[in-house]
Amino acid sequence: MARSALARPVLALESEPARPIDGIGRIRSIDILRGIVIVLMALDHVRDYFHAAAWTMNPLDVEQTSVWLYATRWITHFCAPVFVFLAGVSAFLYGARVDSRGQLSRFLLTRGLWLILLEFTLINWAWNFSIPGLALIVIWAIGASMVVLAALIWLPRAAVLGIGVAILVGHNLLDPLTPQTFGDWGWLWMVLHDPGPIISETGQFIAFVAYPLLPWIGVMAIGYGLGAIFLAPEAERAKFLTWLGLGMTAAFLILRATNLYGDANTWTGQDNGLRLVGDFLDTTKYPPSLLYALMTLGPALAIMPWLEKLKGPVAEVFTTYGRVPFFVYVAHILLAHLLMMAVGLMMGLPLGLFIDVMADPSDLVAANWGFGLGWVYVAWIAVLAILYPACRWFGDLKSRRKDWWLSYL
Image (cartoon, rainbow, N blue to C red):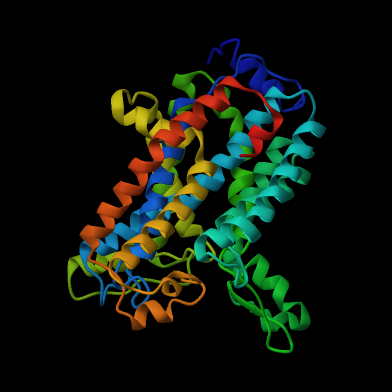
């Protein structure tokens, strides 16, 4: 197959990854897809703050949930895998623009550490309006994976891809291991693979690990390893992403149907079709199983060529959010929490009820806080509408100015 002049430097990056490529602009499908998942992520977090059953039931429990509630939670499964995968792709594209591999490595290291710091401080505070303890959630996973990627990029890109695939495909073999297996080092196993609270020997709470790191390193490494395809001609990129996405989706369906491998949470027969579908699609997010990754990344990659063709106001809205994802992430948590507090105060509830809500929601449950799912959607749309002008302003600022610090936000 003949390749364009743009494709040739992509292949050259295999042996010369430090050579900068001029003229790399923003890729529409990346911004649009990132915008879609950040909008969905906002829905999930607004649900945490406003839904009446947010803390009393699992919305994916087919014995208790409704179709609407199940769909509201399940669709947000796409957010974290796509976000982390695209962070790996963006790292490759950034590396294609800078002068050396060392520059890329330093950027990934410093930005990763910066994100971890923000997770432990500003973001933890925004969730609770206090810092009751460390919570290792998605920004921690992205930041720590960037730190690891800062070392991995010194390997050939094919090796980085191979490591990512090996981690993602093989990490479920480690499921039988528990923190107790490692004795005093059990906390490290929790950081890497087994979620839960880290408690000191004296019983003191240290941190809650919601996003164990190992599989997310794999997802980001795969994104980096596949980054070159996003510099290929559009037709070639569309064909590759379509077939890869469909292949991953087919692999999910086959492995899930057979309960052969890839998720400890196997599905069973149910008494009706909707429950059967719900149980089939209920894969493990913490940590993300192989089937969870295939179920989410497969369809996301398959639709990317279609997103390239998306035009008009809908594309503009998603692109606006997708150009400034970290800004949206921090701002929507803060805004949703403030909106929750404002509604509560108007209802005559005490201010203290809305402090430490994520760390300890027991007071909210006791006060019967929360609304129906329809009002959750109203609050979600309100949060997005309020944020939109600020996102446009910040996106325009980042496009006009090249200050180094803007790349960390």
